Length: 216
Ligand code: FES
Ligand code: FES
Image 1: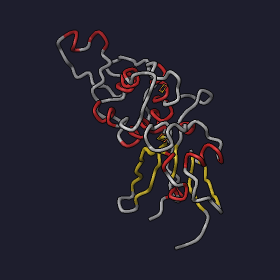
Image 2 (image 1 turned 120 degrees about the vertical axis):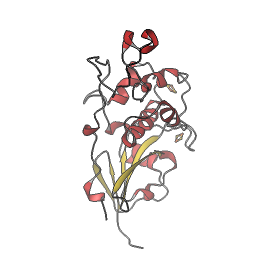
Image 3 (image 1 turned 90 degrees about the vertical axis):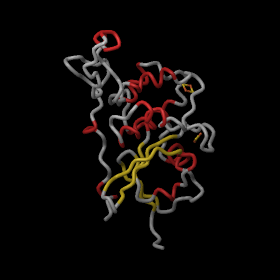
Image 4 (image 1 turned 180 degrees about the vertical axis):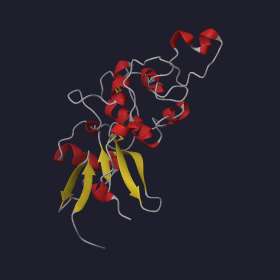
């Protein structure tokens, strides 16, 4: 056992706490100590997903970074030593530009009171970090832990369907209309000159995992 400060990253910034309170959860720490209030407190017991963030960890065996969506209300702050946390503030904002996940849930009217939205956005964002073109089923499974009491889920799923393998942007030329499928699967942007109404997903713009946390 080596005594030392708690070191982890939040949205690319290093947090070094010499005397962390082991009773704090990540949610409390984010909201009260770091003033990042985008992550919401709903049930406080792992049931609603309003507090979902992405936790990233370096796996020395495979030399890869794995991203997990996690309930911040359940994570003891001291368990995050050496990990990177991404909150909804870290992926985009109205001031600096929305992330495509944020833009698509807004354009599809998937947010009403908005309380569940940061958690839903972070579940989708985490899925895309691990798998930039999921299937529709994988996308739906990613929301197993997120509850929304307002939208009835349909607009949320409709918006996020645009990230999936099955999404077709051929418009009137879709094989459903023409009976002639020329593989309308697109990569979240354009195909055959068809432009999307949405911002394209560009994984090269994703923040990198902090090099300091790559420990082999
Ligand atoms: Fe409900 Fe964390 S606040 S799961
Ligand atoms: Fe209100 Fe989801 S938009 S709870």
